[in-house]
Length: 355
Image (tube, rainbow, N blue to C red; front, side, top):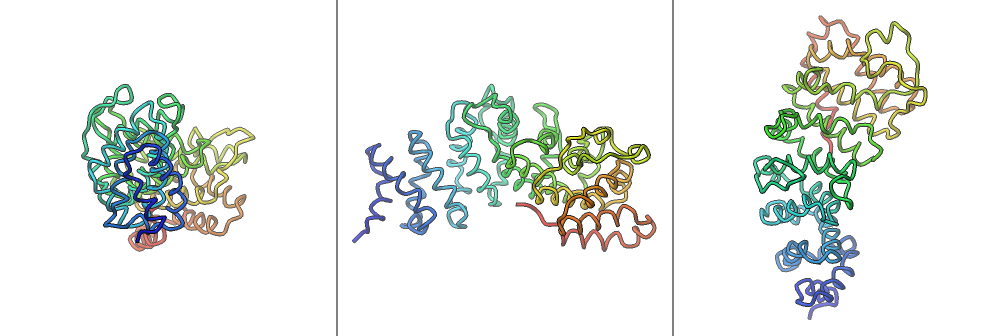
């Protein structure tokens, strides 16, 4: 005989809207406390909730919350991420300027990005959601959501910050690393340049996701020239500025520093999140993989910024990363050439992809 909880789950497919609404309201807590109940009958409740994301807002909101909580389960994740119709349903809503659950959908997409199945989004074409975007590529449309979300100019109910976590996971895939470092046909802009400007954004979620995206792209060594080139992405100022504090530098120091790093205001603050600081330093470590990368950083004042951060940030993990970086930048290139391969392999073991 079904338990009361099993009966409650069964009401997800009830024909009465009010009963469905009451059911999902009461089931939200169980998605954390007793998630197994949603896997009954070969994931029947999951299949029901895929349909309910299209229901009335009070129902869809709670259903999305439940799916976010459940998507850390591998079986549930697979069911959600591999479903083409469900993915299109999410994309249709997240790109809708009047969608009140767009931020919840962004969170769910960030979780779904942990599945290899979502790599297909790089080739996915769909209807152009004007005025959001002029592109028929799903990734471009999500990028446009994220950029416009920062100023609230597209959807008054959404900031799309959690798409930064989605991008970070997608940047682990070779297809993602290529996408983020290649100018797109619809606007001739390299996507990572749209994200890099947010490394000092007020939103912690947005900053953390963006810096993780940059770091995961940096694992792709062939992309280093375009990332480091002033004519390309010019990524170094966006990595270094969050590491910089209010310290003053000598004229000699400033002579080799990037213009964006010179004469910073006396109230300049480093990013307050130690994990974000460490991620930035690990990105710089990845750029030391090639001689060209090391030379570019030596000529950009990276040492001066790292030196001051090492002095002023009391965190052992960050200081150790700074010391590794300085050692590679200050080492004689002949010595570096002999140990370059060993260092690269060692760094890739120590620097791990995020999320």
